[in-house]
Image 1 (tube, helix red, strand yellow):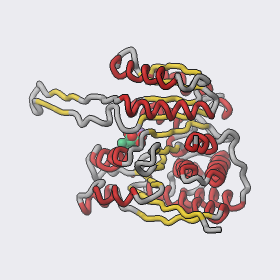
Image 2 (cartoon, rainbow, N blue to C red; image 1 turned 135 degrees about the horizontal axis):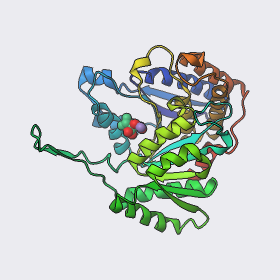
Image 3 (cartoon, protein in one colour; image 1 turned 90 degrees about the vertical axis):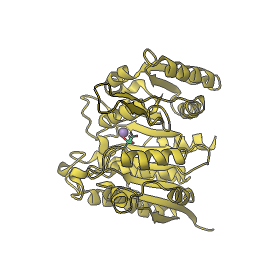
Image 4 (cartoon, helix red, strand yellow; image 1 turned 90 degrees about the horizontal axis):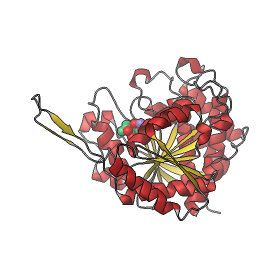
Length: 374
Ligand code: IPM
Ligand code: MN
């Protein structure tokens, strides 16, 4: 039987990006060995150093090159040497747009044994998925400023919401909810952003007719900031606009143990571009090079990537191994973890190789496979 082979573009990026990516790649090596597939990996040098050396952000050529790959594994991008907004817009947002990564999938799951700052929160109460619309909202319009340098300086920054993009995100969220616990919450701010809000509500209603078994709910984004930490069990799948999704997923990350453990998948839903998988955390230049970054977010993003490639068993095993190693740590970030980024990667890789940990029950990886093949 021919071996399954997948081609990966690896974008380690800046700061702690390369460290957590190395750890994830060691885990990938173990998964390949155990589950009998191979990957061909191309490292693409996008990020601050590359920009400072060449002046290049995401070019047409790089987009064409990335298109040839089955998936993109992304570390983190950003550096104090480059003004905020340049790399973020020129690389990350450009990639999400060019590859038509319509949704940004961000699981919020508290694994057993993992310390959370929310007192008394048991793992069984925290297992939700946030589906963030990934190409529009406040992220699309570049905005404009007039009367710069005068007291009349005026900045305009609008949010764009197309039926097309909102429908894609909402439809995906319904499908995911229908293979999970059958509950979908729209998170928005319809009491103030009435134009965008009513478009989202109308899409929810129209698409919902095709999913009679999914129960729906609505929560304002400000109220979400209370409900998410206090009663995460209220949520199964949450669908939301790009900027709200950016904000509430950092909150979600904290609930599940911190930014270092949160994963994401930027998914192209139609086969018109390559999906990209990245930990939610940034490049953390202040701790780069010390081995203090938690590689769990990168490893769980790898698990999502493996699910995307159809390596479901490997995906669930990487998730289970990462969850088990995380659950034994005294702290989730910095020196207090008691082990370096590399050591943690090696521990997760060993657990994958030995098959010493079990897949988590009700794993998102299996649910995604069902959504993607439906
Ligand atoms: C994220 C990040 C990005 C975003 C930035 C770096 C552009 O915060 O992936 O959540 O706002 O989407
Ligand atoms: Mn963010």
